[in-house]
Image 1 (cartoon, protein in one colour):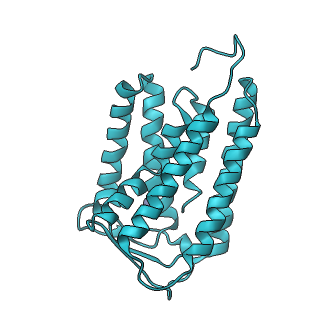
Image 2 (cartoon, helix red, strand yellow):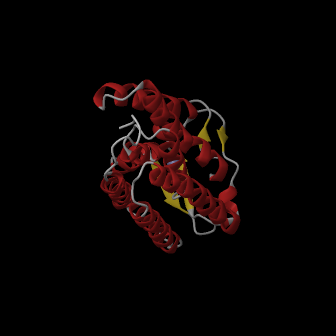
Length: 224
Ligand SMILES: [Zn+2]
């Protein structure tokens, strides 16, 4: 699951627009943003196994970002930090926490069993990655549905539709690029892999901040 995570961010923005889009967009990938950093530092580990069906990622050690307790901690921390730092209402802060946790649920759907239920405990994952076509259809379908809801919400608030279309186009391009790179074999440098992933997550979050602006006509609602 890569681009599919953004469906949660867009759905959240449609449901609770008072948090900035970038917080949802960074939040839905927060576990992977942490993972990228820890991968660069050699703390969490992965390898490429071209023999694996679908995604060649063998994510064999990532307890600090992708175990169930870690995901809960990151989600709670994100909500508790976002509330005072961004001066958000509780509903928006809690929505950010829910979006952070959605990452684990979506990963549970697609990952092979590499998500620890507790430290050094059983690893889970339903393994939809083993079926690349339905997995890709699911990711793009989720983004399309959530993207349509978000675009409709923008239009209802008097905001232009084109930034939403541009953002969805960017997500599609990133997905196409990442799947064309994903099949390469060999042992990638963990530092470079983490840095590349981090760069993509930050770029998408920046793009989200950019498209989130836009005027609202007077009387378009009390939400900010
Ligand atoms: Zn992940």
